[in-house]
Structures are given as C-alpha cells and as structure tokens.
Image (tube, rainbow, N blue to C red; front, side, top):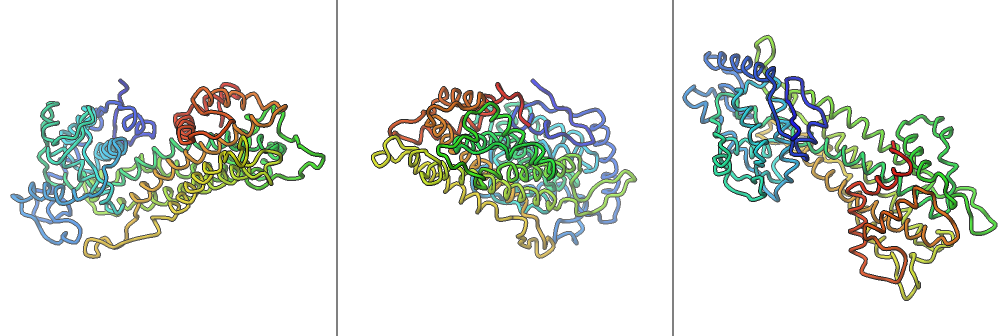
Length: 512
C-alpha cells in the first residue's frame, strides 16, 4: 500500500487525496519527530514558569484571562475537547474526516504546535487503522479552526465518542482503539487546543473539490462540443488565433479541448437549409469563455490551497526562537473566499450547459431536430422532463453560489467577533460539484441522442467513441418514451467515474 511520509514542510494535494480517498498509510519522518520533541521542550519549559501563556496555562477564547494552576491543566485540555465536540446534524463523509485528520497531523508535524511526538503518532495510527471519528455537519464557523469537527476527531484520540471502523460499522472509539492495539492519549498542556485550531476541514474539502472539478471541467468541454455538433454549430469560433488575442489560459485550453473533440466532424458548420447562420447562440459560441473563466478561478484556488498545505495553522504557535505567540493565522478567509469563488463558477458552468440542453429540445431553435428529441412528439414527451430536472439542479446551483464568506456571526462573547464561515462554504461547494455532475450528464444524454437523430451526417470520431461507450454503459439512444430515471443515473455514473473522458481521450489523446 502507498505510504505518505509527513515532514515539517507541509504536504501536497496528491498526498491529501491518497490518504483521504485512497486509504494510503501515513508515516512520520524523523525530521518531524525531532521537531515535535524540540517544540515540546519549549512548551514544557513555559508551563513550568509562573507567567501565564495562552493555551498553555490559561483558559481559551473569552476565558483566556483565567490562569490555570498546574494540577488542573490536563483536565483543561480534556475539557476543551469534550466541550468543543458539540457538532450536530448528519455525519460528514469518511473522505472528509480522513482529510481533516491528515491535515491536522500535517500542522502538528511542523514543529510549531508543541504537541508531543506520541500524540502525532497516535493520529497516524488511527488513520492507518481505518478508524474514522464520527463528525457532524454543523459546528464550525471556520475561524478559530474547524473547532467542532476537529474536536470530534480529538475525542476519538482520547478514546471517547464514536467512530467508524474499517468495516463501516460505528462503535465506541474506545472499543475500536483497543481492537487495533492503540493506546488512548492523555493530553497535556496546549495539546487539546493544538488539535482543534486549524482550517483543516475546509482545506481538505477544497483539495478534493479541485480534483473533482479538474475532471468535470474537461467533461464540460466534451459535452459543450457534442451540443455544438448536435446543433450544427460552427467550430470556427474555436480557432486558436481567436483565443490568443484574449489571452486567458483557461479559455484557450477549453477551446482547444472542444476543437480536439470536434476534429473530423461532418456536422459542424453544416446547415439544414439554404440560410446558414452567421453566429451561434452565446451558450454555444461562448462555451470556452465561460468554462475558461472557471478554469482560471480553479488555478487561483490551487494557489491558495498549495500555500495552505505548506502552512502551520495553530494558535498559539511555537516559533524557532522559543517564543510561543498568539496569532490570527487560524482565520479561514483565504480558503473560504476561493471555496465561494468556485461555487460561483460551478453555477455558471451548469447554467450554460442547461441553456444548450434547452436549445437542443426546442424545435424552434434546434435547427431541424424533433421537439424534445421525442420519437413521436405529442404521443412521446421525449426529454422534456429531463430538462426540468436539469433546470432544478441549476436553480439549486445558483442558490449554492451565494457566498458563505460574506456572512459573519460573532461568537465566544464577542472575542471571536469576525468569522470566515469557510466550513459552510466547503460543504455547499461539495453539493454544487455533485449537482454539476448531474447537469453535465443530462447535457450528455441530450446531445448524444440529438447527434444520432442527425441522419446522413457523420459525427466526429471522438463523438462516435463517446456514443459507443455511453450506449455500452446502459444509456439508451433515441426511441419511444421509457422510464427515464435509470438512463439519467447511468449517464451520471458515466460522467462521474471518468468514463466520458476516457472514451474521448482514446481518440483525442489527453485533454488539457
């Protein structure tokens, strides 16, 4: 099994995906163990002094003014975990929790948190054993870290709360730890706070969303090309010299992908009458501009994610000169903003795809296709309600595009008076990515049917490969009305698991 080694300088997005989704094992580097031990010596020395140090010998948040005596400090660390493990609502997905745990371990191993090496090793042991703490949907404001979600993870380290075992069954964490020979940790000064104070949940969801969107944006280029072909549009608008004079890199990449899919098409630029169109509708002609803007937004989001993956996010932090300083690096604004930016781009990509689908179904705008792509319009309704479903999904995408990060709700007796809501931004982006997949699946379904209805015209070789693969996947072609939901589900799976891209790339080679 693949092993990810965690050092002091952060991790990569591929490391996060390997652990969260691929079940990779985690190992601490010798450098990380040494850094953990050195930082811990600093914390122990400060704990022995009479001067109050936030998180070491004081309370937390609005209670930071109280000095905690040495005999109560272990209880203080246990109590912060127990009290902050206050999440509610549905369980968060396993991959999100694994990303959350792994990214917290990343910061711990930086040597800036003061956590003992044995605590970090126990975090790795839980991941390697496939033990996933039960984390709930609500509880993070995305400011002083994803507090409640991280607290539920820390609770499992202590052998408390519930967790899911590698078999998928939820059991008391103490039972799971014992079954895997893992000793629960007894937290010492600062350790409880250090396990809770980070942007790890929102960052993990950002990394996974970017991976999913990388596939979906290339898939959107394919479905847009198929719709252009089905509508007998002109591919001249994809010429590289046109995109070179407006040098947005995402736009050029999307146009190049569409051109590659359409190479050799006998449909593009063909017209069913003697009055050829001068221009296609915006939803067809401007597909590279819209998808390209989303791609460039993703590039910015990756930059932010990479910086955060290299960061040590905690409060207070242990500095190399021995100081332990309070700071605001736990604030989730940088991550929250790009999560919201991506939700806007996803909504717009879904919206333009739905407009192309609607055009395919409208006999007044489809340039010769039957109404709703029906077999016997009037007797058959064709894909009328498939477009309704797609429209409902797009409407939901628009609601999900409303930024969470523009909101702030004060907490902790106004000590934490401005929060990022980054966790909420991440949760809604996951829903948006899921729904975008379905939107593109409906466009794929409509476009492939429409192309097959263009009798006497030969589609591009890449299009032929898609139609062959999607039919083999159980998505049926033109014909009388039938139970449509299974077809749409099969099309969704075809896009979601990458078979759409795989089919195209057998002809085009890798898309950009």
